[in-house]
Length: 243
Image 1: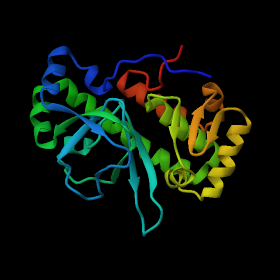
Image 2 (image 1 turned 135 degrees about the vertical axis):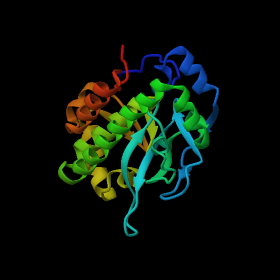
Image 3 (image 1 turned 120 degrees about the vertical axis):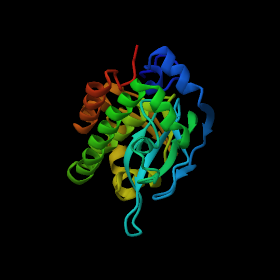
């Protein structure tokens, strides 16, 4: 089984700043715990804090006409939660829910304007990250509409694996069905197929990635598209490093 290489616990947007700007930004941050299932914002609520995940990750989830929630984006230590505050918009565009427990740097939304005034590089970085986010949203909408469940599941597992501190995650069929916008039976068939191919092991809601490269081949093209967009705009590989 492929295992993760050791990595420093950092947020890439903050870590890549010049030393003076990084120190300034960190001076406005507290380290907080992100607990699985916590809702950071509801759609339309006021964003009072922004988050730079370190080793936890969150989902941006949209709700429509009482239907099951659908994940539109996943944010880990490559990004920022609440980035619309940088545009002067303090209303959350979607529900933000913690999907992977861990830590994050938390900054008061009211402080972000001052930080951006002092940190020109961070402003530029967040502008580029906003572009990447805008590219991701329609990509995920098209993926949901056009691609089959199995390659979409492989793509979602890769994205989760990139942002996780483990090769194993606790994911129920109901949860995966919500994230992919499909019925549980569809998830059961897709996960079973990936397991038969020995790409994952799935037992009692615990998924373990067994063959990372095989999972990449099984994924839809959206995964590589998202990787390329991030790398092109932010100049640092989004995919996790491996031995």
